[in-house]
Length: 328
Image (cartoon, rainbow, N blue to C red; front, side, top):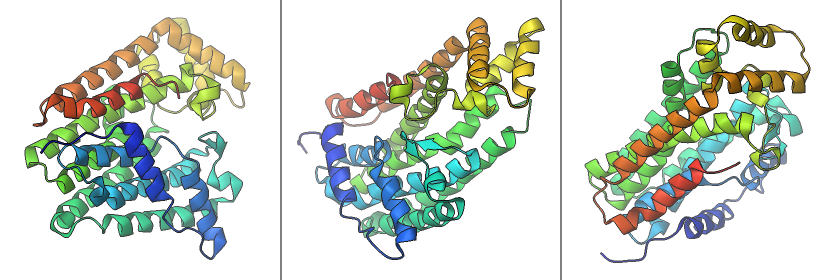
């Protein structure tokens, strides 16, 4: 079947238009307003776009996958509400987080409802694919929770390895991107092999995406990053950069790193600058960039295996490249 493949921009417009049709102007307003606030903060809408872009490889009428795509977006935002509480994050997409703007109880309950809305939307997948779609969605939801638990446990561990970290971000971040793609492929009628290729593409894009996020927290531009720069450093968050710094540091650098990781109430800017300097001396930025490039290359290699013409896959490739070169 010959038809024009929709660009990411066109797909994003479809997603945004569909999101605007979800009625969140309900009572009690204290429950629904934080959901509307979260959804209206925007973001790149990468996950629902991936669902529709994967569907579009195999079918022209993307409207058939719109509700499941929105389900992925609602689920993602539900995880952010809860993650922000656990991480004590005050800013999300350049605006106050829900638990700061309202309170923690509100963020928990509104997040819970967002998850329920996600399942209601996913239930609108075409009947013949519904069982496979729901099985994948459920498995992914479990994995995301597992990843978040590992993330919390790693906060109190000093011996986290780079391999453990990669597995944690695979669960916490990459599987939802992969799920978004595979759901679109399943609904679009892809073969099991092609659906799996797109899932694997999503895993490696997701890993590269999170590694880029680790980099941007330290080396990004405050005006475009959307979160406080150096936030990971201030809370001693186990990122790929910190894990490698702890692995490589010795002598005076090790003493300095341990000092900044254990000192109570340090000057924020001083700590960020000191640890960034340690990262620079240990060249961990390059190590992180190399890991990011490795997973990006794996992503492109597996995308090339998907059994549709190369030009059909260009939009997905372009999106992956843009994610790797983003500054926010």
